[in-house]
Length: 435
Image (tube, rainbow, N blue to C red; front, side, top):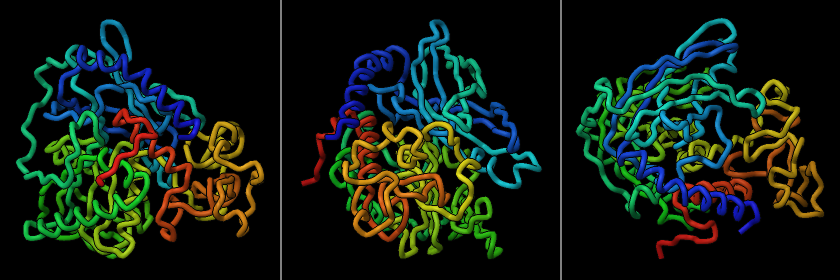
């Protein structure tokens, strides 16, 4: 195991010894869901409370409750009301943050539905939601106090959709629980959905590090039909009556497939324990989307859909950045260039020692020339994070850059292992196998 992985492992061990006691003392084996509306424009944003729900499962870890990573555009923190002790934290991202960078956000206000989930507290808590500035600094966006005994907390029975177990490896508290939701599959297409889930599951486990850690995953499929088959394609004037209201052309990007119906998505996902939600969309059009600790989406039947499935999971599960570049958009319009980027797999070289320099051979120059002799080496190749200049990626190509390769680069793979370790408590040297 690389040095960085050892560091993460010992950090997790340090947290786990304390956090196990915290869970038993402060939390029930259920989930609290805090739904909100986030509104604003390119210059400001505000959060308004929408609803609280108690859901029957908690699929997350019980030993490591305070996330040791500094990832995501937002973070939420749960504090004990009486002592102000930090009990739980997670980073996440959402569509509103992305919308703020669009031209539209300069001129109008919009609102987006948001939702966060954490273990159900036994006693009163403080909830803080923080937003990351363009720099690495966090600023408080919203705070509230929640009494878990309040009668306004909804405790509805989840919709009675059947749940099919695709793979069960063990206790949800010790595994990564992936729930797959169907979108645009009618009742008659539920068999197709189950076949598609099995196909994507098989493909997923052909890739490292997932193949070596297969036994770290539980996978369930919720059999929730839509009234019509397919999804919305606004650019082609195609509109479908589907359960989760997904659509292409998000922010006018044809292949960007998302949903803003977060409420329905969470309601359907509550039928099973989950750490990650994956929406499989019944279409042969190319596209997908992945948002950190929010949701994954992928179309089912395009020739490259299986590769997209893995790519989007890299976003939503591990907060990996896109390593491709569209054009010469100035890097300083997207990132703070005065300090090193917080994203794991891209760098502006301000503090490259804190990134993946330990994986770079001494003979490899930084920046790294885009020439054949270095195409199989780890270095710092210019072009990534959507811009051609000023941002650097670890290798010439990677699953986070293109469909031309199947594998993650060593930097992405190392971080994926660290995330698996975070959810399962396994040493990064302890590889799982189905053999």
